Picture (tube, rainbow, N blue to C red):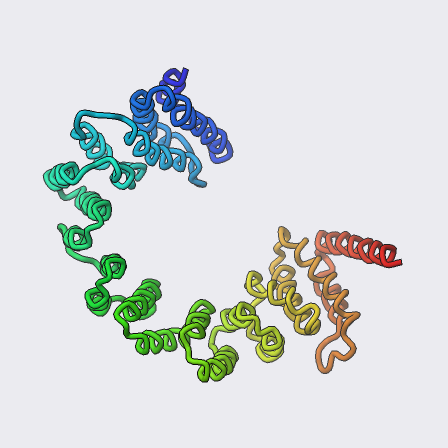
Length: 415
């Protein structure tokens, strides 16, 4: 039955669109599970052969499916890992056959399904098998597959836990690139060779604003600490923190700091947040380090710099401030309402409507608005400016009714 199903899938040419892809993925995954569980319990050898047959249909399948969400290819990725697990239970007289299977599929890896096949077999292959695979890869090298060969040699080095072989693999064909420096340093740190790791990081040429700088600095701190240079590691953290306001670094600095330094650092960190050029990152930092009073002060001080489209930063802060500073919370909700209405983002009207209702609820907690526009005045401006957005006002009316019902229920319960 499973062979018939696989044959049917191999022969099929019907295009599967995005909305049907999950159903196909479920069908494939059920096949995979039956091979892994039912077949393997009776005959690991047949299960292994059947899984190879299953994997061999990936090319035809992926060529006729819209796999934008990755669910179909995900089944084949998992099946590749299963293949290695099944191989551990197959008693072959020698591993040359396995090496040939791994080599053939890795070198003809059109859809990246076999990216991890070497690693999947690391507990099955012996040193002589890895040597044979390495030799076959190098002999197969040409202009088109140089990167594939390099990836394979790196995988072999990792399977053998050999950092020097990994460095040699990085140097294969086109030389060592900037990202290789990071990977090499990471492995040298793992092997307790911090001085060498620092040299590789220092020789890494990357633009100052490149995303790899984060990994480079993180590895440098790890290497310095492993080398016993704790003072320099702390200096690196402090410098990096001043550039990023990273909550993670903040915690690490406090953990490594002397008691007399902690209070000064915490105070300076809050000051840095108020002066930090990017307001959303600064406010998120204050929220994450739980300086809630400072969050409210920050909102009042830099409200005009905040962007309502950054709702993933503004909303957690607004929800947090509802009880401690309702005016600051209201200002944030208003910030999120305005771009939705100004840009007529109808799919977000329900969020904006709920936020406007929340502003009305918070209004009852505010005795003095100072120079700010109170809720009644703000609501009139919104009503005038956006009176034609009927669907929004319908959402608002619905949200208002729900809030009224909720409050009535709370009164009844308290009585």
